[in-house]
Length: 525
Image (cartoon, rainbow, N blue to C red):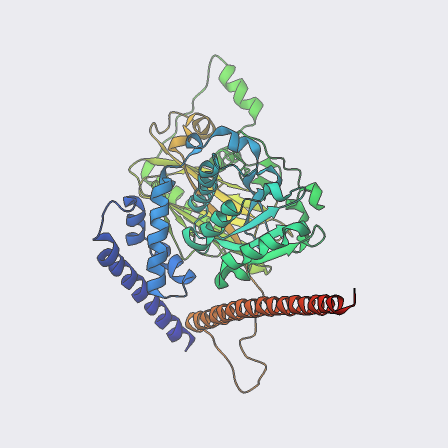
């Protein structure tokens, strides 16, 4: 039953996506072809995830999703979002450190920091500031597509002069319209009481779909959302990070380690294991003037077959028990499976995950895998190369008693090798230009323990597929919208009540004054 519901839910979503695309072409593209950036239109027509993002945020109402797409695409063209880079943003903005991406919350969402005290309202620079925010959001969207952000407004030592309502409204719109599904939550830290009125206005801008994502926290409450390792010292955290530019802050990806130190190359390690002599023996043989060579008959076919069989046996033993990927990212040099995340659990059979790299070029491709937690994971092979049309299985396993965390990330780097065999891999990576390196990031998904599928009512087991979850999500959204409308009506009623009370008080005061004046006029002179 659950599988049938899941299938029907997927079919309904496909229909909605197709309907959205068809109507967008008929109702929006026919009017004007230069209204949008052609690159955005191409993504919408080819990438289901883009359309799904707008549909989900608009509760699967196609009309609302189309309006959102139209507004979003016009903004992207106006701001030239696809062409934003470090060179198009004034350098002083990067140097201030008022806005940057760094660290993760407890759910594994990237933190988008706004240091409010460093912002000063200025009409001359507002456009550049808006482009600056768009630069960071677009950069993150390309590096970790589909992953939400947690926005942190650090309001310590800020005052009314730092509050720019137009800029705040723009930030809200970025998540409400321009980057749907990007907002995990918005945390306001240490807000001065004098700004309460301003944030009540901001709350009304968020709308019902995002109102529940707004969190107010003091320094003592912020660790509820963010671990101490990603909180600055002034918030009671232990994060030693200090913003500086250049370069732009990024995840600290490092080479995985083995028990004896860093793994430079899997091939290098294997070659060392297969050496019949030690280092001294090799040096002496190279330094000697005469080398005795013992002739040996070689059957190349037998040797190659034997080596191939050994490789298959080793690979099968290595990947045994590893969780196999179900999704694939289509890259320029390599197809990477899985496309977004590696899954790990606490059970013995859940401590291995498999990455499959497939070479889609006509040349040999060098690759290496890095992680933000090198002490936790073992990667085999962590660095090697892949032949044209071939695939490589990489096993990522948890080391010892280490536990996976949603904050952990993996980086797959790849570059095409033009001159095969002319240089060693370490030397190749030193010399290859950054512009020729393909990068793909994978996040870590922590598997939850087995959950009961039966409800507390003994005789009524409940199975909820994706369709049921979607209906529940829709219902919740509607309840939140209704709640918001009721709150607005209640606020307006209270406002009217206060006005009436004020008028009554004024009438009472006027009445007393009239009586007083009448009394004084009737007194004999």
